[in-house]
Image (cartoon, helix red, strand yellow):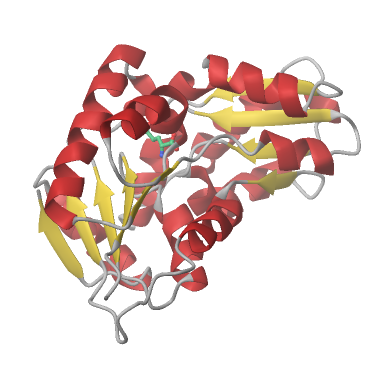
Length: 264
Ligand code: DGL
């Protein structure tokens, strides 16, 4: 039997940083990439709103696209709503949580930074990851309120000034111990899409880590017995709102492998 598609979900286009390595790991799989642009940004929302919105929306998407597996390619949604989503859906769900474990393995100085959305960096889930995997480290956290929006603008082809990226990095670099920080966890899936801009601000001494490659490996493992249709059906992006920004994103989406756009 032909395998069903993989549904990859984010509030916006940030999840492309997770979808890209999944596409490389499973080149025969069809990907349905769902962006909740009607709810973007999640990072400035209250927990209760995300905990209600994400399982309901994923329920609709699963009913419509019948995926083999769902990837929540969003740290904010995963750290708040992963358990709710797993309870509500009857398909396997892979989440995206801050890559604190690999960062703690990589650091030489023992100071790591977690750059996420304001909602992500205040989650208990992040406390638990830090306690489990980085108890020997100082873990600095910064919630960069506008950085996901800046990343969306970059993908729409708009010019975003360097100050937007230096302001975000300053939240970590100017914190106590920030001068010794050598690894930064990109704990929002939008941020790897602009890691070149962040690296240009930060200089050579910082390594950036994110969860994309690990999530692709996990997804490929969970789907290792699927028989993909060759050639696969075209990849597709589904937005929850019809907005002018959707058309502006079309060239970037094409570069990432998506020719089809649909509005839910
Ligand atoms: N891409 C999402 C994340 O990984 C959040 C962006 C937003 O604020 O909606 O956290």
